[in-house]
Amino acid sequence: MYKRVLLKLSGEALSGDGKETFDNSIIDKIVKQIKSITQDGVQVSLVIGGGNFWRGRSANPAMDRCKADQIGMLATVMNAIYVADFLKQNGLMSVVMTPFAVGSMTEMFSKDLALEYLSENKIIIFAGGIGHPFFSTDTVTALRASELQADAILYAKSIDGVYNDDPAKNPNAVKYEAIKCKEIIEKNLKVIDIAAANLCYEQAIPVVIFGLSEENGIVKAAMGEKIGTLVTVD
Image 1 (tube, rainbow, N blue to C red):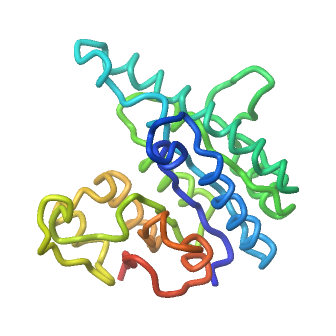
Image 2 (image 1 turned 180 degrees about the vertical axis):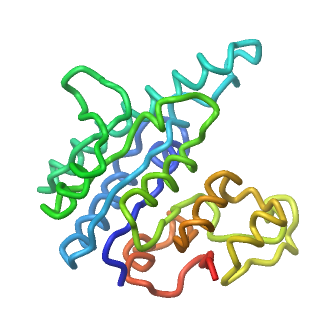
């Protein structure tokens, strides 16, 4: 069992089949798993993408990249506030932290304050990325995990692990049970972005990549059970 984890969820994961912005049945399953692992003593923080609201410049390819990324940052704030309320409904205390001021709706990120909240069994949701364009939510996930000295990063994805090729295009693609972080970088497997992979490698943070749809997948990953692909740093 890991003591302190950072769970990364895509924004698309919150929308299920994409027909609605939020699929409450999926979010409820996520929150109940988070509650289960916190009751077992695991300290949990989250990073949630914004893809259920915004997918970069897909709406307008001519749009300025910086402006597109700023909209994406705000999308993650909306998701964080929504999930924070869901956590509250399930009896869990949480705090949304951002790298920029969002009125009274969020708190400014502080490493010391974040660690204090974790020690109080509060769940932290990091929103707004790092506050600058050109950096993905994968990158801020690795950054915050490094700052908080997390024991592991748990990536809950639509795919159930790391493959040597795209399994959606290649039915013969082989899934790795374990792979070195350095190999992901060298082979450019694109399961997480290169900046995030490099930071995890430098800071020796193991990563578990697994399918969100797997029953109790978050619990299994946090408990250190065999699931998905373990990305090692040795």
